[in-house]
Image (tube, one colour):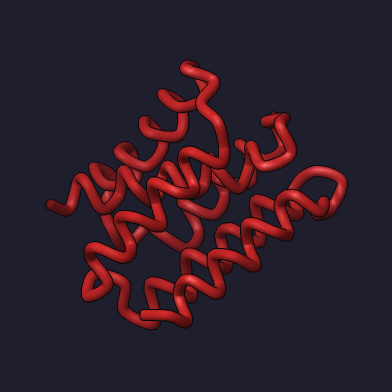
Length: 122
């Protein structure tokens, strides 16, 4: 169950980074920085699940929209897993990734705003 949770978080972070159709080195570097700084408490195994999911989706060149919708479906099916502090941490990381390369663009801003709205529904 936990592995699935972190896999979905990896999918979300990928969707945010890929929202504009491009995935930059800066965005990946920021993801790694955020995971080390803000997510260390979840343990190395779970951090690896997030990174592996992100990398697998990148290798497959998955659509950001599909990945985002998949995360929202998981969120709606498992709202109890997303306590307030987890939602805040996810939003902070999503924002940091979105701002990593030439600040934020409209596509990334749209996903971050949609994510915030989805969190407010639960």
